[in-house]
Image (tube, rainbow, N blue to C red; front, side, top):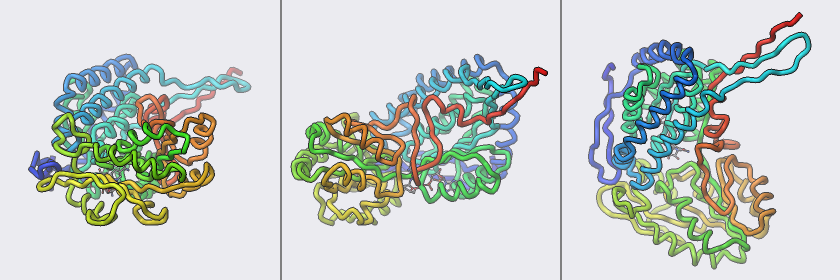
Length: 455
Ligand code: NDP
């Protein structure tokens, strides 16, 4: 690899250097695309059962290294170790699930006059997966595993801040027996390595997860070549609490929904909408729950929230709310080294910048609503549409509201948005396409229609 640039990986909890990683230059990207194309031909031609077996072995290799992978995620991303273990397990599960799809990826036989009509689902070729720093390991797997399972090669570009788990996954794939060149990791800067991948004519599809601003640029560049693209972008998701909800449960669950990963989560329920008659009571219940959300050393299993990823990200969050500004609820965070920011709940106007834009920090805004129609209006008053939660004991209302909210992932009396077996993705400016779930592999294929005349 041509070393035009190196990037230092920093532990966000200590500000210590964890590693130095060389970056892939455009010439490296070009060479990687050629290696991928060669590997992909053999991979697509292999027996489906063999491809499935190798992916299961890859999943087993990940399973055998869960602690090591989790420790890397703690070191480079500052994630609490319990969450990092879940993330490593999620990579294993996503690989297993994708492996199960290899032999079930079938086309259709469609009734037509004069012959027989078949659809074939063919791999695209080489897929680029551009991952962000907020959940480096799972998001890398959500794109890569189904793409590989559908017969493609994958070039994965991790975020500059968090390349270590991706590099380890590529080594585990080789150990598991995946062909050389089939799954390559290309660390580097977004505007160099990422852009080279997006622009390369040998890359058939780009799977991008990150900010809406960068996603828009990636989509525009893909449009130059009519390149396939999946976008998983930002969010400003509502947590809607009706007066008839189990308020104790709703309040106990709310902190995790916007403080998990220090709020650096595209699904963060950062707008808490509460029906007016229980607004004060809900805030009373929310306060101890937020204050009890332990912020500290990510390596401690009792920790629920770690630091932000970088000094720049903390400045971004401070741009929305200063730590000395009045807040409805403010937690505590360690002082000194590390990019810490305390849990913060604000009472602001619905039109306030902090109530409208994705903060990507441990900050939520709480807003009252009058009735169901008002809740839906507020929930939809955003350009985003990734996820949302509805808390009520009225099942009919839960379904009505879930259907009325323009977002891809709704949860009722829960904040769970992500399961490897269910589709995930956004409405509006939160993205394009879906990942995970039963159709994940199909998103990495072209449908070819073949008509055989019987005349
Ligand atoms: P970006 O969207 O810029 O980065 C996401 C990924 O895209 C990274 O791998 C990045 O590389 C890469 N990238 C950056 N520019 C390009 C480009 N021109 N072409 C191809 N790839 C590119 O997010 P940031 O890290 O800059 O974070 C900024 C803000 O974005 C956050 O504060 C947050 O609000 C939002 N964000 C949202 C995410 C979500 O899941 N919704 C995830 C991450 C960020 P590299 O990092 O190496 O430059």
